[in-house]
Amino acid sequence: MKQPSRNARVERVTKETSIVVDVNLDGEGAYDISTGIGFLDHMLEQLSRHGLINLTLKAEGDLDVTYHHTTEDSGIALGEAVSRALGDKRGITRYGSAFVPMDEACVRVSLDISNRPYLVWRVDFQRPRLDGMDTEHFKEWFQAFAQSAGITLHVECLYGDNSHHIVEACFKGLARALREAMTLDPRSGTIIPSTKGTLGGEVEV
Figure (tube, rainbow, N blue to C red):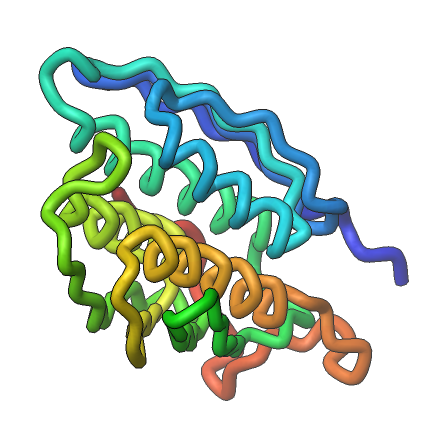
């Protein structure tokens, strides 16, 4: 039986941000991303390319006030798009993990597409700011994404000194783990990978 296309579009508009996201989970890693935050764009490009997710994300936000709103809301919108594209999650592998080294840094990411959102974040930075962003904003992005996508997500920096390398390894690790977990398992067919018979629908955000 032919699998339905796993595409989704999300438009999220608040008084702080306006974001449009299109995803194709079975893509080639093509991207067109513009958030107004150069480093965040670069990280989302890594997520697209290494996760083989075709991603278009356009965001306008109150960057003159703070980067926080655009960072967090882009995580919410992208997570919602991934959740919608996964549908009822029939046939997916469900679990994924990755070890990603980048020079002196190494990050481990493990996740479960469970519809039970939870983030474990064991990542410390030596610098309070990185390429114009407060480093605390990265945890907020991962929290927002996990909550909106309905993913149990564990991110741990095993070691590393360079903040750029650590952050990039986190996003690449998420990409690789997500790619594995979203892959359709030919042995599963159309079975939902849970003894409950359901992994739930979209998460309320």
